[in-house]
Length: 249
Image 1 (tube, one colour):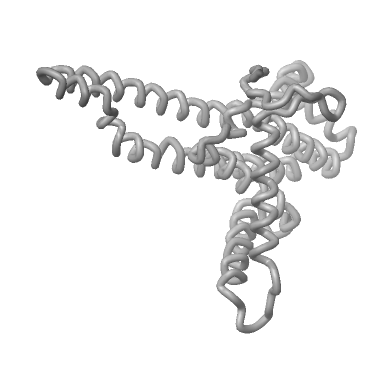
Image 2 (cartoon, one colour; image 1 turned 90 degrees about the vertical axis):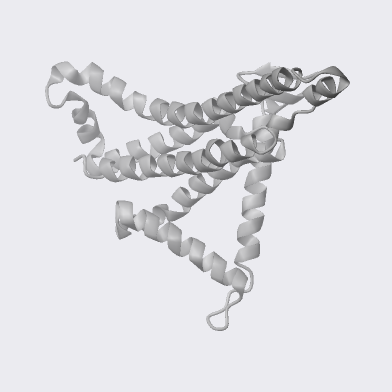
């Protein structure tokens, strides 16, 4: 029997790892991670210095693009964050687009974005403490005046929440709008062709002719463009927050 917990359908009720249920979010996310790992291994096999293959050329182009993306927004001294930003971007965009093949998109589950945001928040806090020390980090909550300390703490804790809800809200809103459009086209299809007399009108009203073409065009925005933009924005915010944390001393 399928049960719904926090928006994530459970595939199996067998508890694992201390009673954590195996949800569609976990299953699809692990499949995506395995696919991305397999693709990375495939593209980086048998690397050469000369006479490189097309596969290696694609790998080098992707790595170069990721490095330029991080260097352009954070600086070359943050080169160690290239793998993290690349992984977040790839996982985000593939997770969002996974709905196109008929599976549950992990980014439609708020737990996914919250886990990414918590990871980023830990890195931000680590960078601030590494830059200014524990006392410097604590002192930052009292600036510019001590009275603002509670508001500064709330603002700090709001960072991962805002990152998660921004990404989640845009993805889910796209699904909702797409569903409403499908429903509206189906209703319009029945209303339009039912005006035709006799059996012809009844038959045509049962065939979703208006669902052909229009949803595909809208999908270019709600699925492809929106998924890319949310992955881009989340990655940009991650870089900006971490780089800004290093300058907060």
